[in-house]
Amino acid sequence: MSEQPLILVTNDDGIHAKGLRELVEVIQLFGEVIVISSEVSMSGKACSITVDYPLRAVPVEKIHGAKTYKCNGTPVDCVKLSFNSLLDRTPDYVVSGINHGANSSISVIYSGTMGAAIEGSLHGVPSIGFSLDDFNPDADFSKAKMIVAKVFQSVMENGIPEFTCLNVNIPKGKPEGVKVCRQAHGKWEEEFQKGTDPHGRDFHWLAGYFKNFEEESVETDIHALNNNFASVVPVTVDMTCYKTMEQLKSWKF
Amino acid sequence: MSEQPLILVTNDDGIHAKGLRELVEVIQLFGEVIVISSEVSMSGKACSITVDYPLRAVPVEKIHGAKTYKCNGTPVDCVKLSFNSLLDRTPDYVVSGINHGANSSISVIYSGTMGAAIEGSLHGVPSIGFSLDDFNPDADFSKAKMIVAKVFQSVMENGIPEFTCLNVNIPKGKPEGVKVCRQAHGKWEEEFQKGTDPHGRDFHWLAGYFKNFEEESVETDIHALNNNFASVVPVTVDMTCYKTMEQLKSWKF
Image 1 (spheres, rainbow over the protein chains, first blue to last red):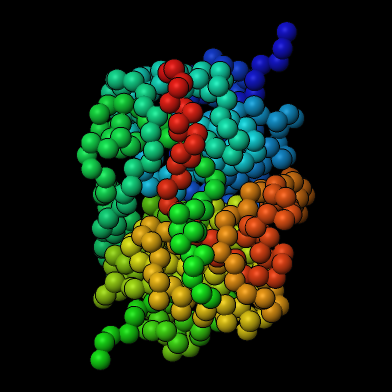
Image 2 (spheres, rainbow over the protein chains, first blue to last red; image 1 turned 90 degrees about the vertical axis):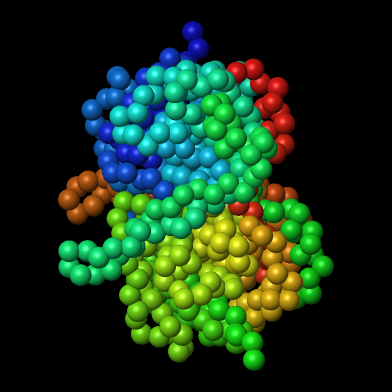
């Protein structure tokens, strides 16, 4: 009998997040799961790595029977450490999430959930980040798990081209289905709440709203979510803007 | 007389880094400079943002006569805060660096220097990250500054297409010139040094070497640096892998 696939599961909401536990539960149907995550929230940690102090990974209570480690690093650190030091064999898949809150459009560049998936793809294995468009810590993941199972099944059947991962965003409620699409063009606006702390010092707290630069009818990840579909965006690690590169070649330096 | 351009300068090595001071010195030739940076190193912070606690920006001693703020956030936080709350008028340019160490190839996704430049481009202004291929805290930036001046001058003349920024890497010593190129395809390998701390606990400290997957003759940023040229790679915020997107459309979910 062939060995079960080994699936590394991580997230950026921390080891106690409901979304992580729900993801472990559904991904276990497909293979042996190992979990590694931070004890604290790593939301918004993007692809950040820890260079100034050492990392530790400590076994903790299993999640749904899966071997689980807590780690003092970022989601990318968790993936790097697992591949390089922690595990006896190379994972066959990296799965990150289920994030509490969408990581559609430009949020992909800030997302720790997607940082982990991008890092997984750099290690040469199919990697997926899953996010639910609901920030509630006690969100209902029951329908989202059906999308996770569908997408993971497809990835097992088809693979993902090397150095590409999937950014999967799932609407609240009951999704109508799955759409493959591109990242919407948009950004976050008016991003700080000002205040004064108990000691009289000014502070600025990151907030704001997402502004979509696309026409409403254009098929993007935001469009999919707005129409109650889960979005699947393939994400590359090559950030070169090739069109601009050609323009720049005429510049005189 | 028309107003001088306002240039926001930041970095990821912290406010005391030599590379920041050298960058301020050269960029001041082109306009009014405002500096904002962290007191501590933000190396490897990528595009990370701070959501779990408030940010503060405090005026500190000027750098080469330029108004300077220290901030408790990441490079991206510094840019967001400057555009949204700190400055009286919108900066015309964002310039980040000069980083101590190259940010070529895949390092673009981990780099705080490039995080700041990417964020600048999202705010709709021409943005550039500069890095010197020398980790020495007391590196010689004299030749690098000539490249910075050349590239900045070109950007003032030509602009940069919206939502694109430049990743400029400069070799040690005296560069032969400037090459516009794409990000090399590569990754970091064997990334942890293991040890035991004074309290008997195991630790893992991020280390490793860069592995270039490209043929030696292919023109990339790594190739430029290896041949003593500064590299200029335009960087996009759209991480969609369009080729894979087309493949995925045939999948059945």
